[in-house]
Amino acid sequence: MRKLIFAALAVVLLFAGPAHAQKYDLTVAGYSPGGLVSTVGAGQTFVVLIFIAYNLFGHLLSGVLKHGYIDTVHFIDIMV
Figure 1 (cartoon, rainbow, N blue to C red):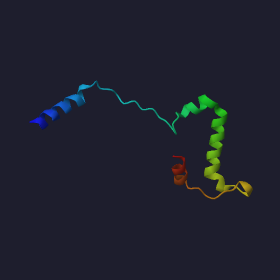
Figure 2 (tube, one colour; figure 1 turned 180 degrees about the horizontal axis):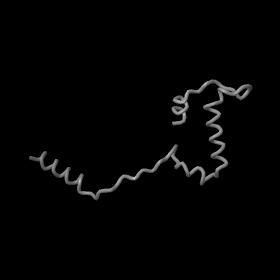
Figure 3 (cartoon, rainbow, N blue to C red; figure 1 turned 120 degrees about the vertical axis):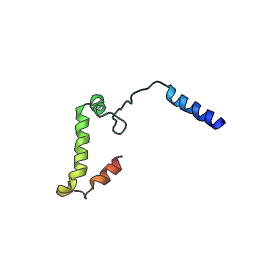
Figure 4 (cartoon, rainbow, N blue to C red; figure 1 turned 30 degrees about the vertical axis):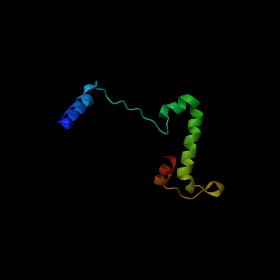
């Protein structure tokens, strides 16, 4: 009998609160995508994008800027 009362009380408490829609807030590495631009300006965002492009496509360059191939999955694993 105690278990039935406890279960009924748990169900009542679970559904007694007001219903709220879930709020989704997209964050990337702890910051919103527009947050970087508004905080430090478009210049630093551009520099970060250049470094990401170099990391993903630097194996196609020649000379001292060339580096070994970095797989996209490995890059995402490192960044996360």
